[in-house]
Image 1: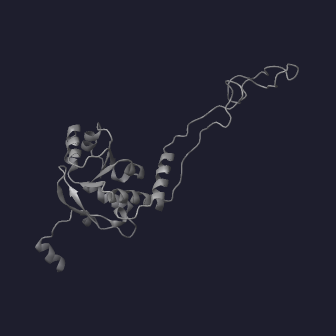
Image 2: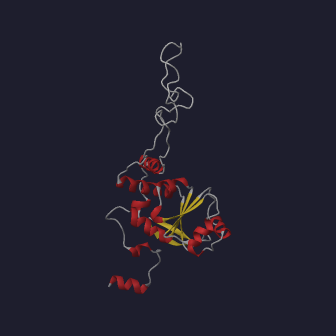
Image 3: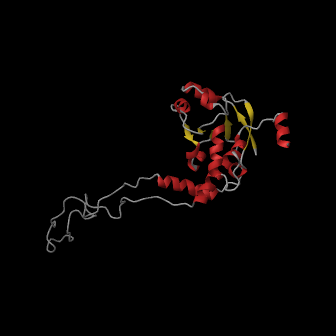
Length: 233
């Protein structure tokens, strides 16, 4: 699969070969849903806690005698039916961590990337690291592409100039290619992927046995006559 590579001005600069096992599969909706639920569950701290009747302060004395008062028998004013008493079946600290097989996690990432690309919501950009670390500069770059409510910028590594330029923009997030998740890919309307980040994405999530050599990550250009003769030889 080939896709155009754009510069920061929105003009086509060349094309790039994409791995069909990452960008061209049939999206698996249920696996993507399970991956998003898992990520949200794993983000929960689980530190909530309520006090039971044995943990609430006070209530050590029996409020009145067992018989002869005409009222219901009570053993403590910290019982659940009393105001200020303990909580029955309330939340206590726990772990919400969910497990998911590695192959399913990898399938979810590939499905999310393929779904975005099929919807024409993924754009491959070159030269983004040359942008000035200013908010106006990043706004000009994003203005050269189709308008979007939110943008996810995927970098090959942490680039301070890109992060600083996008830091003050609403609904714009920068992330390193090795840290992308299904939730981020699906949450943002458009995904900008730097040319160098494609190599990392495909190197991490391409199917085993179908990964290509590093030389194939470069922009596809017409080979020179001398190069063609050497290959034939």
